[in-house]
Image (cartoon, rainbow, N blue to C red):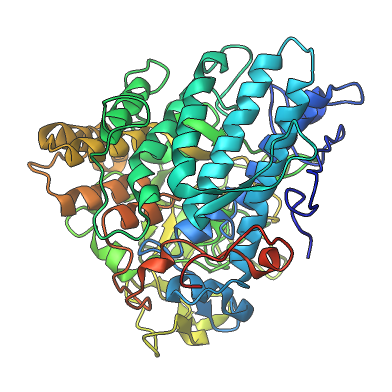
Length: 584
C-alpha cells in the first residue's frame, strides 16, 4: 500500500512539485494544462496540485469524504443489493457502525486527506521560496487549503499530521483537535488580508478566496466546542472565541453574515440549480471543486449516479449504479413538507412537455448530448419514491422511440427484471441488523437525485461543480448560532428565508415555499437537513445535536468513540508518532 509522503520518511518531508500534472484544477479562468506548460513556475504547479487533491475522489466521490459524512448518518446508506455492493462489507460497515482500523474506506480517506495536507505544505514551500508577483496570493491560498484539509482530517479522525515545510529536518507533529482548532482559526483569520476577493486577481469560486475563508471560519467556530470535548454529553457552545470576548456563536454569525449580506451571492429560486450541469456561475456557490469533462481528468458524477438505478439512463451511453438510498427516518422527516421546493422538482422540455414520473408517454428528443447525436432524457430532481418511469433501450442500444419522440415506459430493475422499479421508503431488511437485500429486494430505498446526472460518456464523468461552501448552508449555520444564543426569532427568520426564497416549478405555478410559524430544536434540526442534505454536512450536525448515537434503520445504538474514525492500521504500523483513537 502506498503511504502518504508526509509521514513516509522519518526525517524529512518529501516536497516535490511536478510541472506536468495529471489533474485539472483551475488557477485562472482557463484550465490548468493551459496555465502549467513546460515553462510554468513551481509555485503555480505546486498550488494546482494541492487544489487537484480536492477533486481526485476526496470531495467529489461517494467513497470519499461523502461516505464518512453521509453513509454514517440517517441521510444516506449504501446497502448490499443482491450481487452488488458487497465489497467485503466496507459500505455496510459505515451504516452498521462496524468499521475498524483496516477498513478500506477509512484508510483511503485518511490517505487522500493527508496527501492534501502534504501537497499544501509543498505549495507553501514553493510559494515562500519564489519571487513571483503572485507570491503573497499563492502563499495565502496554499495555507487556506492546508487549513481546509487539516480541519476535515481533525473532524473525521481527531488528529492530523504536520511538518514545517521550511525545515527539511523538522520532526513530524501530530496535531490534536482540541488545541489545533484554535491554531487553525488564528491561521485562517491571519490569511484574509492576503487572499483575493472573489472575482479579483483572476479568481473564481474554485479558488480559496476571502469568501472561502469566511465559510471555513464559520464552520470551524460552529464545531469548535465539539473539537474541544469530543465525547461530551453537552457541548459548550457559549465559550469565548479564540481571540476576543465574542462567543463562538457570535463568530459564526459574523462570518456567515459577511457572506449572506454580500452582493456577490444570492439564493437561487430553483434550489436544484446549484447542483446542475454547468452550475459554475451559480449565485449560491461560494467555494467549489471545479469539474469538467476533458482529456486531463474527467470530473466525477458520483453524487448523482450512486443513487440512479442501472435502468435509469439520461442517454443511451450512460446509466446509474443502484447503490445508495436514504433511510426511512430521513424520508419521514419530510412528512407534511413534500410541497417544499427542495423536496422534488419535475422537468419541462422546451416544447412544453412535462416529465412527471408517474405515467407512460413520450418526451421530445430535441435535446442532444454535447458532441454526440444521442438524445438526452431529463429525470426529475430531488427525492424519488414510488414507481419510476423513463426510456428503455432497444436491442441495438438506442432509446425506444415513438416517432421522433423518446418513449417513456414503466421501468423494472436491471438485475431483477421481475422486480418493478418501485422505490420504497421502507427498507425492511430480512435481518434488521444487517443492511443486505436479496436480488428481488434491490428496489428498496428512496433515492436522491439532487445532483444532475450527466448524460455524457458512460464513465461517470461530470461538468457539475461540487459545492464545498454554499450560501443556503451559510443560512443554516447562522440560524443554528442564533438558536444556540437564544435568539429564536432571528433563527426562525433565516430558516424562513430558505423556505420562501425557493419556488416550485411552473407545473405548480411557481409557488413559493411556505414559512413556518415557530422554531424549536427538533424543527431546526430537521430544517437544516432539508437545506443541506447530500452535501457532506450531516454527521457534524448529528453530533452537535446529540443524535449520532441513536439507532436508525440497521444502525444500532452506538458509543461516543464512534464520533471519530480510527487511524488506519497501515499508518500505525509505520509511524510511531501516531496513537490510535480511544475505543479502537
